[in-house]
Image (cartoon, rainbow, N blue to C red):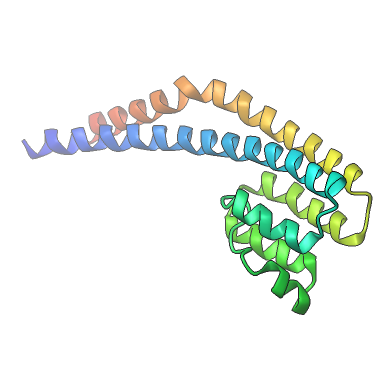
Length: 162
């Protein structure tokens, strides 16, 4: 009785691990798509409305809290710290995957250095599109693979331990 319960728990744990891995891939894909939407809106705010960077950062925090948390007082913080340090701290609080965090950090560095914002946003969008496409390919392969692998590993462990 206890052995069969343990076997069922192992199978369930394996299935959970597989679905959890699939969920992480899907969440990363959603973040990449959200970053592309943010880039388009940043382009509008910077190029067309000439929004100052401190206000842009606060606006991004309101609009995209998953990407830019902790930016409510960005304008006040930028008086004491540099724009890039506030940008970087906000992105690090978001705990994004490294492949998504790196283009955001590069964009913040380019915006704070005074580089052409349109060129920086184009490079950012291109980099995020490449990452998004790789996540999409990984998701398509992982839809059946990860849950099946998790369940198979759980079954294997259950058989080995019985």
